[in-house]
Image 1 (cartoon, one colour):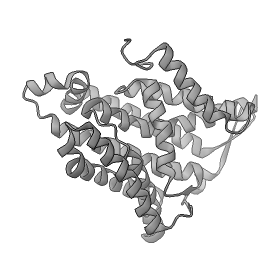
Image 2 (tube, rainbow, N blue to C red):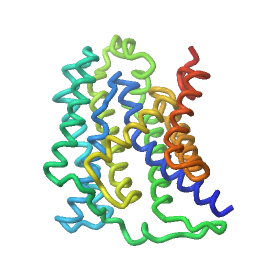
Image 3 (spheres, rainbow, N blue to C red):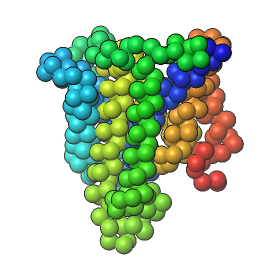
Image 4 (tube, one colour):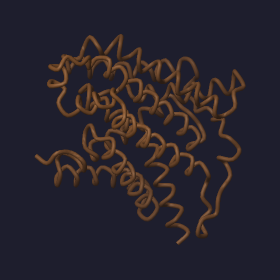
Length: 288
């Protein structure tokens, strides 16, 4: 029983991390139709920004995370304005630019901070444990789950209760119609990139807590699972991404424990294949 509880909470924590990355990725693709392979760079900037502000400015954990999130948001906005905006009608060039940016970002981080993982400034309470139904659960799992829940609620409130949120939702459904109504969708594009960058940067900071370190390639490896979460959940659906992230995290944790090493990752790919064969549009996507 204790193993099941521990695996369930660890899987939910991992799913929460995937959701934080996938939520922005899903919004950006849904509204701007940009398959953003540079999203992992926003995550890495958030992680290294948090580490740097803690190590060199002496920030406590929360201010350090805020510093990292702001840094990731600024980078996301600059990428949208300077590199993506001129290429909205050129899909191939978008892919090439974002892939190149992702590779260049990893190389730049390696040149600046080195290729070896750096110990992350985990707060003392996150390194402690809590006993639940006989299971000894690290507190960082609860931190991840709580952060993902807050982000999910915040995004839903933004999408349903604000004017820009309404534009984003309408743009995801029918961007051509929204543009024809004279609404400036480009501003919404920038805002969505900022939201996505902030969520990814937060994921980077919390990934450092979860793994205990930060490395230049961390964003790229996590981005692969975030893409799988977005596809399973349904492209452009934040709610679908949340459900998908929970499924992926739980499947990965339980199969890794009860099967063999490496089976967890393979089982996630199998889950992706099953969903695409039975529901090509994803869990929350339109049936085709």
